[in-house]
Length: 249
Image 1: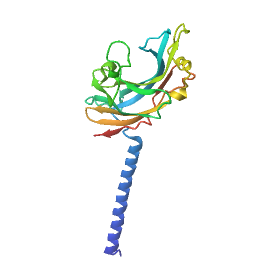
Image 2: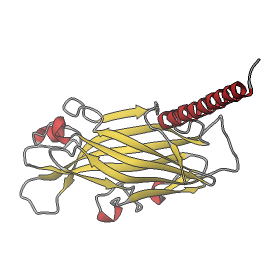
Image 3: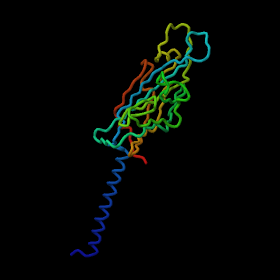
Image 4: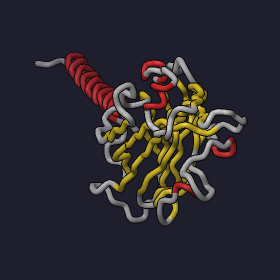
């Protein structure tokens, strides 16, 4: 016959076992969330396109030479945000998208990295004007459709743009060239190698809807190609497993 004391011991063992299983389940869920983050957001970062180019910008200084250029290596980043087909919520819209906490890691051996927003004036998509420099953050507001020059993104999805520009790489002057082609050949003219202009950048990417806010860290290695061999470089990233979004207050 099982004594009362033995019954209490069995009950205690069962209670401790159940508690341990519950805590284990919670721990597994927490670890999974840390690794995978939000897996069914109403709006998703579906694609990142990065276009790397090189251009010469005429200096303001007077020169006897026909050509007098400062050389810039530009990395234009396009973030595409789409509605999640498996979690469509008609009453939940994009309120804003922010790119903040921009950090330059492993700065290039040559040049200085500056971050630009799209130009809000007529003409070029980007201009090297201090009024378009990104300081603390770049914010796109939700709107009826995407309009990069007005810093607007469609409330049901669209794209946001930003440029990471390496300025001060060098200067090129010449009277010999009949024409100038604005690509990586300019780097060869000033004898700058791809390895000397490589850098890493990280930033916080925040999608805020009318009901929640999600944040992830994005890390980029720029330029994405080898400008020693390519005239320009292009990459399209659709695998977002390394970009983990988590809900924030």
